[in-house]
Length: 285
Image (cartoon, rainbow, N blue to C red; front, side, top):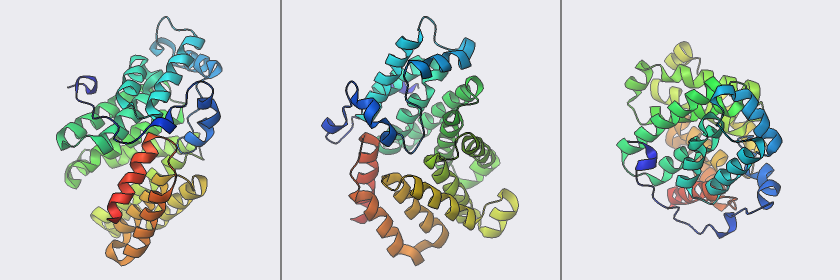
């Protein structure tokens, strides 16, 4: 079932401060996208996307019209109207994939309760990302969104299934590509940290190191980079807590609680950060 036909649970918090109407979106953009380095979709960016995507670019839209559509999609994402963000982005094909995948993925992570449905949405997001990688290979977020979707999909499978499907290698390759194109991509650094930590957490340091090149030192290096780049981002602190749990278990439970507490106390800039912070607060109860 396509996500657009499925139920979309509404954003459960007050979204008034996340509207970003008119020029406020552009002003807030550097802070809103500190984590994913998404370029602001003005007409110049839209023209570059049309040129790069070639035949995969949306038909009958000039740069100004495409810029307006992308801005509307991102406004919808930031205020928590994830269905509209997905629909608008998805209608634009690969040039709208970044917002479509982010909306689909964040909504699935926090607002889809059924495990099977969540897995289907991550699978759909991964397919959209594959098309984006093919059309826009020089775009860091084509690769990052692919890694994000595959990573979340693999978390819903058994470790044996995920490893047999070779997902770990695909995630690693996608993150390497994203970080090569955008070295300051905090969310890609976070995902790379989790890549190392999850493999070690699931198969142990020795097999994880020999088979997948997973190292605790690499996990720590990448999460430190993410926290340095985005100290105000709830997800960086949450994933630092998750990383400590994966690598050290209960031995670091105080540091884990501290990380979640920091995330819960940060002032969210948009709906995604509000969901991140609410999740962190729930872990502390």
